[in-house]
Image 1 (cartoon, protein in one colour):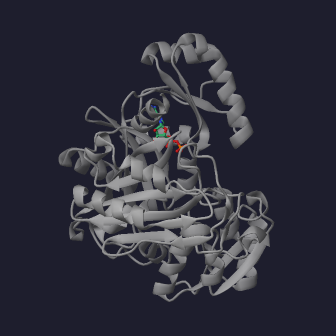
Image 2 (cartoon, protein in one colour):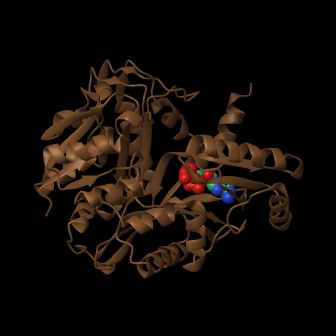
Image 3 (cartoon, protein in one colour):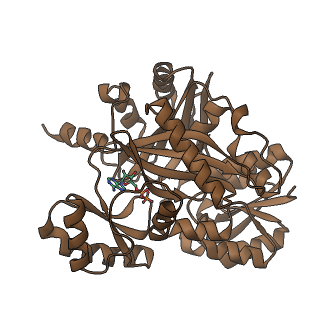
Length: 448
Ligand code: ADP
């Protein structure tokens, strides 16, 4: 078992990992930028080390500073959380060179899935259905036109190194193809330093359904069901729930296919395979080789600690459960509460003057907030995750509503009012929504 784990992250996820380490009896080291001096993860860790000024590039993405922090503290492993360095295989290589364990999958799997073009090719080789589109990178208009003519409009141009909902352009007709292609490649170069783009058929009304898996270093691998993450704005998730409303048999099949495929490449640690689901068919979109923001909804319905199991598996323990011993039940929903205006979603950093989080049966809040904390403007605006659990979806929604009503966050704007409005919408209440529903609803609402 590890002696000391350094958590190369901040906010709620750093605290989530700290809690798992504490329960496992592992010492913890927090790292922080000067903007996070008063952050909760710093107060909760056994030790903490400042790794630089506020900009992420100089702190949470600063590999030499993080490796120095490992050496100074004597940490024998690093948990990267999500975002920041969690899918950076160069970081894994450097840690290995210093004999520090990266709590995550193997270097080659991070590399394979981090490149979306390579990931799609790998999915084909593994027998996973993909969205029709280009067979790899698209270099020029001629090539793009040939593919678009074959699959039909609308299409979507995506950056091979894209992430966080960025680097995607929808093209409705041929007259926009040339300019969109050039614009996408330029943008991809600017944001991700990789100009390679590829083309996919744009699916009109799919659901975003993803499968959670976890494996150990002995090629035992299981799935923990699926999550519906179709409540999105600008391709970014706002609310996730599990189970999805997809037919039970179809769900079981996609989970099994995901497990079989990843077992065949000897995948270890946690991971999520993201699919679009339309008209009874699943299409591979991408794989995230890390813990995801929305992992708690799965933890709730499986009564299973994904983070502890991930740490144990990285320290060479065998999985503590097998597929047949798992018995999911009930329903869980997570709301991502962001420090943003609930109508415009413009970030709202500042000092939280009053913070009171909800409780009671089936209510979990993952957050690092407290009254008096300043939310810095430099990072992601996620400040709290409200996760509720109940025996079925209807009861879960009622519990979610009363929890949102109980939640007090003052001094800054948050997306709590947005969720309260969402919970009044019939389409949401019926589970009858796809990835475009929310934006359509909001656009119509804004019209007088
Ligand atoms: P990222 O890594 O940036 O999150 P993804 O590939 O996971 O990008 O896609 C994010 C979201 O974009 C999806 O959940 C979906 O809403 C939308 N999207 C991606 N590909 C397509 C597609 N081919 N057709 C329709 N929507 C898509």
